[in-house]
Structures are given as C-alpha cells and as structure tokens.
Figure 1: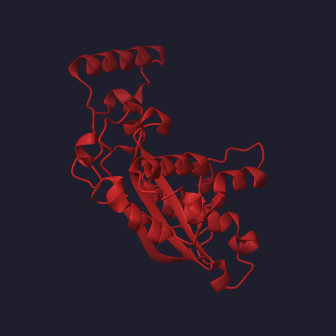
Figure 2: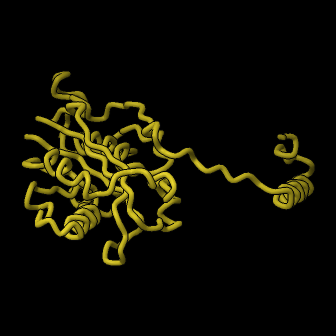
Figure 3: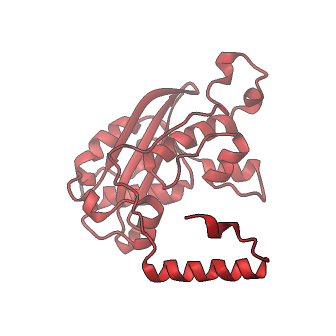
Length: 236
C-alpha cells in the first residue's frame, strides 16, 4: 500500500482568518518502507506571518518572497498524493488549510479527500496511549525516533520524523527486534536528520549591556547567598 506522510507550516492558526500554507513536506512509504521519494515546497503566502508562527517554524515573509504560490504547485502536489493514503498528525488542521487553498484557487479541484484517503496519526496515538502526551516530540521519545535536529518545526523534517514514528507505532513488536531484519524496517531506528539547507538561518538575539549588567548582579546575589559558591561567575 502506498502512503504519503504529510506536514505543513502556515502563517497562523486559522484559514478562516485568511492564514495560508507556507510549506508542504511529504515523504512516500510503499509497503511499509520509505522509498526516498518526497515532495517539498516553500510557498509565498502574499500576506504577513504571525510572530507566534515565526517562533515555531522560523519562516519569514522576506524568505518566502521569491517562492512560488500554492496555485503554481497545486497540480504537482495532487499528482504526488493521488490514490495514496495520507498520514497526517492532527489531520483536521493540515487538511483544513489545504482545502482552503484549493477553494481560493477557484479551479474546481474539490477537496483533498477527493484524491486520497486520510489517516490522523494523532487520533491513532490517542487510541494506543490514552491519557498520555501524544505530540510528535513525545512520540519520538516513546518510540526512540531521533528528533535531535528539531529545534524549529519544518514540514519536510517533521514528515520524515512522523514517518518513522508511524511505522514504529503501527509495527507491533517489530521494534523489539523479534522479527527478521527486513520486517524490522525503520521502526525505532535512529537516523540523524538536518533542516533543508535552503531554510533561513536561526535568528540570534544577543543580550544588550543593560541585560548583561543585570545578569552579573543576579550572579553576585546568588554567590553571596551560597557562600561564594556560584560557579557561573567564573564563566565568561
């Protein structure tokens, strides 16, 4: 069975308030094996991005200014996912945004459900682990999937991570190495990943002189209270 693991990044939280998709990342699974095929685009939303969203994914209006619009990659996207089963973590969020993009095109493409079936891996995780945290980071820890490079959210990176989590979560005891090497596949296997090299660099905000002075005073107060045992005072 062909499956596509999908993730998006957006300008905000609600397409009904005019927010748009700014990144799509997909990876392909065929018969429970990652094929190496992927679909990935950054997109120009033609609007500002909420500050809260930038803090999550690091994508800025300036970085996206020369990227294609959704309408320019829509047909290619639908061709990639057509006939597959989509695996999405918190599917209503991503599907809602993608369907909003299709609707704005006014090209009669219909909804995403017209082209493929959809599995919500968050709903699946809640069924398997009721009462526990089931966000992607928590599932990575539970299933020993490497997410060490996930300092910011990124659609392609998160899709790759979710693919490993999904295979582990739906693989029964294969992650305990009770089957053959072929059966074990990628479940639970640690793979180091990095962000797309085309992403904008992380924004570094350095402390100003006032903040440095306040920090120094705080350390001195700690040193006094601890009987001259503040080890941070010696670190420059």
